[in-house]
Image 1 (tube, rainbow, N blue to C red):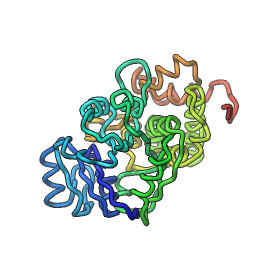
Image 2 (image 1 turned 180 degrees about the vertical axis):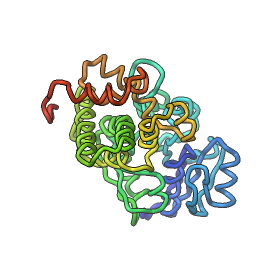
Image 3 (image 1 turned 90 degrees about the horizontal axis):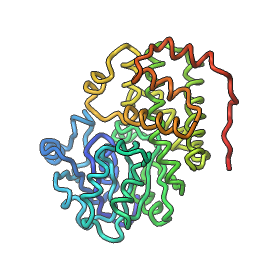
Image 4 (image 1 turned 135 degrees about the vertical axis):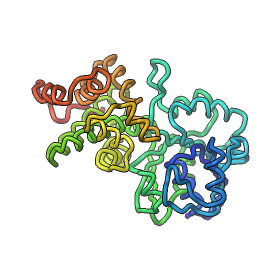
Length: 341
């Protein structure tokens, strides 16, 4: 726990934003959680719960919620951006003029901007709207429910500004949450976005009742595809060997707490995608990311058979059996085929 007291704003009252705000409150810092729902804000302030997103979890009594964005970020030392990817640009644009010059802004959203053809990650969107912000990216195997239950886990904070990583480590480090530092913001953020696609694949496989060997193949080949794409985009593939890559991929591809895994599981049971997403009631970023990833892989000529197969299932209406048969009969390639340079 940090000896210095920070004033913190967490933007986004979903499961992860609430969990991060709760950690900050546990560590004794002043924290405001911004969300759009007056009902949710009242529930958090009066009853210390967020039953829609974290049912059954008791929140720290010092955590305060507000629907006023300016109030939330006023004089904030650190702001965590935990809104869905589709809202990131709008919220970032609204923040212009509200943040102090030395405020640290951390992106935790694992997604890609849906508008345009530029394949922009959230930190890139934030930088366009807030070019002077001291940016960092946080990602790792961080299922929100387990974080809120104060179960032991770890994450990675990446920034080119060492003061940013040091501050976030001091702010969040506690008995149940370990924070590692890195510099590869692009690679870390790419890990967090891409793994959501493969969690859907894994959920489909689980619904089909595949064995442990098959799941192992699926996860390791997913990692190979992610690294292959990352190298093509200029990221460091070694970032994918750490918590933000292997760690996050594993937990997202194996836990029913993962929204993207649950989407895949329902699809594997033959349910309709729109109905599945509506029933989930929360954003599953992998659905949006898949379409953008597929288009970018085609443009860059990156070999990504799992992503292509999932795209054919969701958007081209192909059957699971046909897609699996096609992938299993394809030409065999090398196991590890990306360069470390």
